Image 1 (cartoon, rainbow, N blue to C red):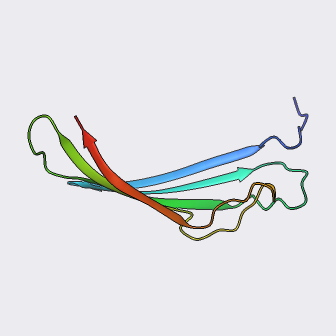
Image 2: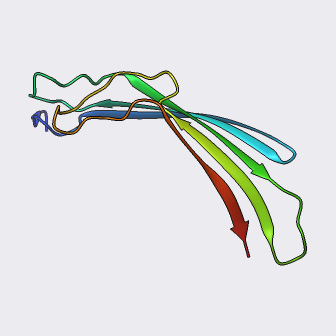
Length: 101
């Protein structure tokens, strides 16, 4: 139908590019959303980009694969908000070590 329902996301896009060389993978992910909002404070319709790096370490033995990862969310510190009562985070990062048995 051609009926538009307000406050239901109408358009969503995700763009991903990645590069892998030997033991390291880099990824850039962009997300765009049009919330079709009736709230006056909504600031959407903009891309928010995340950067990820994944490092695979050499195997210790045949049973354990190790690695490390880091993600920087909202790398351009884009200002976006759906509702003032649900504030969106600014730029933030996470990282860790991965063990696969």
